[in-house]
Image (cartoon, rainbow, N blue to C red; front, side):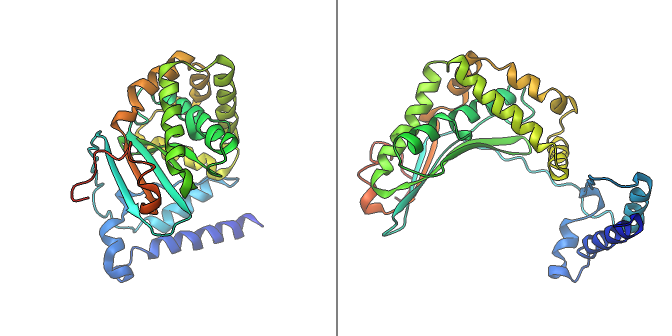
Length: 281
């Protein structure tokens, strides 16, 4: 593709973005929520930088300023709670175990990321090895630190057989407690650090990956050093750090537990975890 045709395609794509600001679109919903001052434009690839900038400016120069940036930081409540959502006849139960944790601007966030990967956030993690590889309760369990602006929560998600709902939950919480009671072996942690470091490099080898990293910096107000030092900081995490992060933030006694499944078949299995119950249940 020639440079001129590339720029033409770019202008066409940018024009499509611009048309969504039309008051007729979705009853003006777009105009009420999108505008220049709420927008960041990221472009990654091989192109003439000056020509690309000119194309962007030409396309968006008339875009209205639009509404101001809206910031509404949630105020999560860390309190033990339980909910069972009825799904009669379900062959599986979906388990969510979650708790608010620190977010990316916290100095210990990288330690949290490493801890999550070791606990449930990678294929070699403890929870996955336990309830998938050893027990066969589920196929694809996973934990993650879900982040938003100045907010984050840790969650383990697993779809398990109805008849092993209670057993799977016991193993999940058991792994959390074990990691909080004793530090992981150095070789286990090293394997997780190698995984995170390798994944980080692979993510940054694509255009989409680079843009993803830049948008993350923008959203959380992080310095460039967050990326340049990320791998180094990952490998600086110690077994004691992992144990301390688990003790401090991933506390079973303060977690929210939600299960979707066949109430008649799982209620007895999970009775030891079903407290307190939501009001009216």
